[in-house]
Structure formats: structure tokens, C-alpha cells
Length: 157
Image 1 (cartoon, one colour):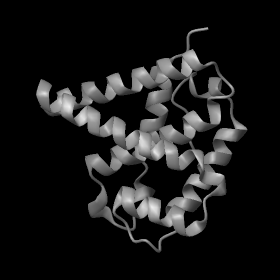
Image 2 (tube, helix red, strand yellow):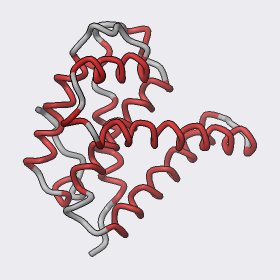
Image 3 (cartoon, one colour):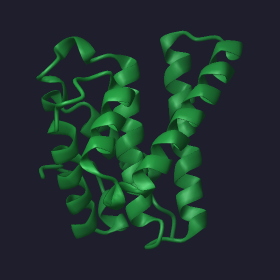
Image 4 (cartoon, one colour):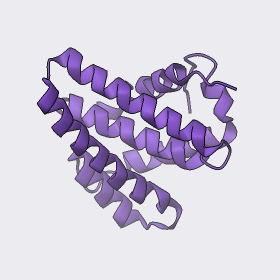
């Protein structure tokens, strides 16, 4: 069965465009912070669904997502050499996030706060993102991988 990766990608983009994520610090609403938030959403998505779908589908989704990011960089106006450099940085950053997300359930509150502070350059004492991503995890657990392939959905959790 061929999944519609574009719908998954668009659903994850929709999550990163959530204005509530930037209400505490509107000036932090930048391309790089949105990309980091996208990576965090994507990392949790992969973590939850990697056991429910086959590895080939997850790998295809991963490849599709990075192709879309590359296209976005080209639309912004980056050249070929800049894109290659940026893509290496982004892949490295995503792997850092995936490593932290894999241990999420066993990570203590202080390390979670430090993770968000380091990734998003936010106040280390703010637990908003921890609460938000805990709700996001529950939302993912309640829905199947196929749920995200159908269409751009209402993502209220």
C-alpha cells in the first residue's frame, strides 16, 4: 500500500504553524525555530509509528520529508552548495532530536526542560512544550499511521 507522504508532511507542517507555540515569545517565530519544531514533531511521529509500520515506509517518509525541506530551501533562494551544507546541519540536528525523543519516557523533567531550552532558545523554566508534546504523544497513540495519510486533518489535542 502506497501512503500519501504529502498529507503526513502537511499535517506535521500544520502543527508547526500553530501560533500557540509562539505566544510566549513571538520574536522566536523564525524559520529555524519552526524547522526545529517540525523535527521534534517528526521525531515523535517516527518513534510512535516505527513499530506499527514497516521500516521501508518509514524510510520513504523520511526521504520524502528531506526532499521537501530541500525544495523549501531552494524556494527561499539558497544555492546548491549552501543547501548541501544546510542539509547536513539539519540531518545532524534531527538525529540529536531523535536520540532525545527515544528516551523521552525515562527522561526527567529537568533534562526535558534543558532539551527545549537548547533546541528552541527558550526560558529553561517553561514547561509549556513538555505539556504540549505529552499531549501530542497521546494524540499519536490514539490514532493510526493511516489516519495521517488520508488528508490534512484537524489536529486538536
